[in-house]
Image 1 (cartoon, each protein chain N blue to C red):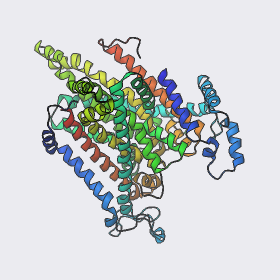
Image 2: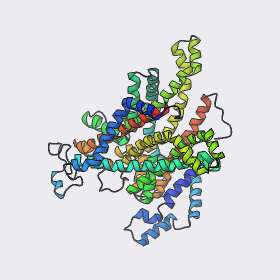
Image 3: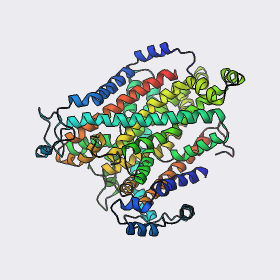
Image 4: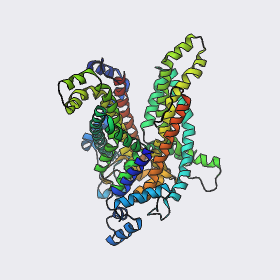
Length: 282
Length: 305
């Protein structure tokens, strides 16, 4: 996982030649554009209007390209609005986990000893419960809110990312430049964050992109299960949860379109993560 | 043992400490203070935390997980029947996915760099990251509604034979299989490639052994070691996936139980379900460690666990 010997320009060139990278980046970018500018494109109000109910469960037509849902709201408009929800929650959660995990990993890797031992024990216990179940436990105890979803995913990611950063820090801490900094009389904070951190950025970037995929997966699964937070915000998981019972009546559009949206987003983000992981690992 | 104890502490924190007032959390904001106090007294959650904690640990050691608040039945009893259901689904998923994904990983590694390798890798990666409830929807639409080949619910009618039960469980197993396929195939492929590039493989080829003998005797045995570890960790993961799958296919397993408990804020039931899943995961990891040690002569376990 060392990044020495490969220059930044070389890595960029490698990335630009990777088909996986371009496909992943394109899909992700499309969804980001939808999330940011969705409001200007949506033909209808995603939250619906009082008269919508008269036109409930309408088949896809020129007026409603993806049909309407059980409350008569335009499925396409809600799809575009739903992109925003997941693209705010998942990256924020991942960012919290990455920042927390980086700090914790640098500290445990640099100091070692009992702090290191304690963190890895807690991590083991944490990891024996699947993320989605930990999240449900915490959200059931505290009450489901969007902020709660962000915090609980970030919290669980923290020790996971810390482990990766710790391993890289351990390797770096033995190198000459760290010894030199110690001899110069630099304090541990300076050594960790100014000397070591820039050299372990590669694994951190890889970890961030991979975790982002998991965060999207978890956020959507939680909202499907009814723990996604505010029910009035349009949300793909929630749309599916509310409409899959209609599938047997041949009413597929309010369920299948959000399902395809989820599939395309997670595949896009993960192709991107895979391409980035590959260039840092070679 | 330390991990088991830490697990119980985490669950205790999650269900007794986090909610603050347990009775209030269960009954919701509109319940009268009187009924909240009554419930707290019945659950014992009006006592000091330390007393509660020792009581809880004592219960764990004697196999008593308390009473479910919303179902008014012992948690242990409810978990028992739910576990039996989930185990059927989990076993079916594993029986399908383990040979399939190992085969996929081996083929990808042997055809490294070709279109076949790329297709298996990209398919595996995509299948792994799509949430189970999404692929579940797709298989229901495809196989249950459009083609009508298989039932869209997982619960076979009471008294069905084994084959009939399996028929009902095939569709729910597919999302689990898809998610696991990518992980296991990926690790198998990586293990195969490491083994193919290793010195002992080159020695075996230069010794003049036929290619399939080399692969069977030298490459596969070494390549499958990391796969075992991954299969074990995926047991824990599988239970996470079971929640969405059992809800979608309306199947009364542990995942569904945890979902119901979480929705109704039935904290004793939730705590029991989460604990059981954690314990299963730790047992699976332990078995994997032992198998790893047995299969790999280079690993000798000392006192450390």
